[in-house]
Image (cartoon, rainbow, N blue to C red; front, top):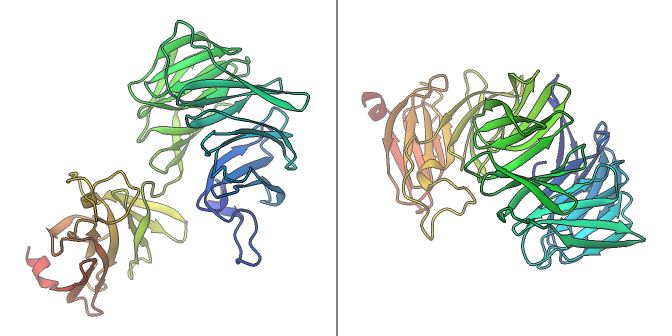
Length: 421
């Protein structure tokens, strides 16, 4: 998902279809940012939930993006934090972001089957049992297990037993009926019923994705995909450019969604194929078009410079805004959700129409000038302003660079200075 749209990517033609959108009077689907998405076991239906005072939930077809049903989770639940289909795709479970972190069960037509308080602590994931009307949640205080019987939803906390308690980041039921959870301290915890029966360390950081199959368990641990057999013996490891946030598997093909906005497929488990790249932290603000190649160059709050070919709709090159992280954000700086410091966030970019120079403005008032979009070799870096750069433009003859800052000044520079440097 992106913003209020569901996106279906055809990986063979690299084209996309969208669920949602339209004018305010004819808007279809969501009217605020989508916060959770699930695909049914048959891969035919998609469920998406959004944020808002009374969050909308939509059920739609994966092949045509046609809406099947639309209903609301409940007033004042704030957001759909997690969503999951049951074993035959006839029901969904959702989790709210209200103070009680309410847990819901619905038919896919919107009929509410049950509601229960999840507790005062955040819940991050939900998963249905493969053979019964039960599902489990994972959150800051561990796992909880819910049963839907006689029109009533009841829940019980998971029991860690002799295993160390942990905040849980993800939860997935395996075909064997066991629940596999990833913890914030790098462990996999396995549950039978509501009892934690095994716990083993696989990484130093949080485990945000686990995918158990009939014969293996795939785990996103750090910047690696870890592979275990059913006896929990490690059988393989694939290095990744970023941590895995989502894992799916079909036959011998593994699909990964990474934290840096990349979707990558490993055919037969080893050969990587990048299906999509994107900006991934904060927001994307800077954009310009190269007059020579027609390529599009974008910058964002994620320390990335990305170059796109509009003909193939693919990213053809990436670079970074700044190799070295500077001081963290101060109060009164550019508003952003990025985890990067201001000197690695960029909100403006422009390309010189005469010599191909690429100028990039950062959130700490710096300007970086690069040679061209092919090499992006840094020519000059300087700081004309104390506040963030909001816009930049080269003059039509390429001899001047105008830089607009949030300090209400426009700075004009002679391009020949950069060429001498």
